[in-house]
Length: 217
Image 1 (cartoon, rainbow, N blue to C red):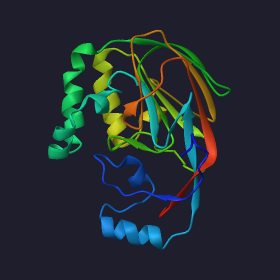
Image 2: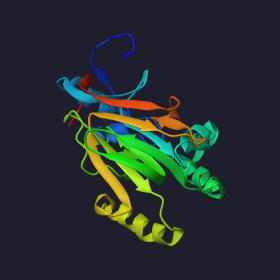
Image 3: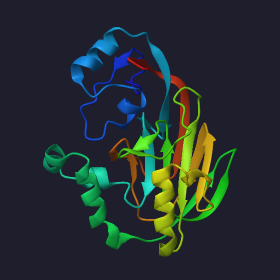
Image 4: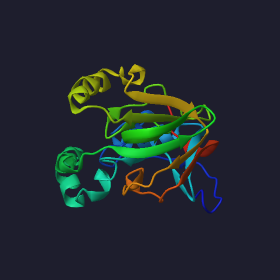
């Protein structure tokens, strides 16, 4: 729709594996309730992310584990739900390594090593609430970079993630922006809302109010 310049209100039925963006907008998991909420609502303009010549509504990511959703078998997802993502993630552990990345925006410049990074329009990825301060109508994206740190420090960092305290960690870079440029010469892919994203370099922008949504609570 965005590529074709079509701007009509849409409603989201949360029938996917994780339903991250639908939950963020307050959509109930019950389909009949979701339909009633959509039909009785007013249009709400929400932000839309653009990445090179593509678009995303929830999150764009790169680094380790970010293509797990692309690699996860559809039949397995249909059978055990989001647990399939976690099992596939465990299979990727042997590929664990540090990655070089270069970030450039008005708010942050960083060149160094990381494990993975996420650029959020929503709040959650795989039901993990990572962008705890995200606001879908503020005209900004929430960027979270997990630095490459010693393995022994990963467990306390994961505990902070579960508590929602990771954004204040010295091992995490966090900032908001509406325009971000990313370079990397590593052999890694990008992911946008669970699908394969474009190749590097990446120019990521926030289109304020770029999507019209029905049913937002």
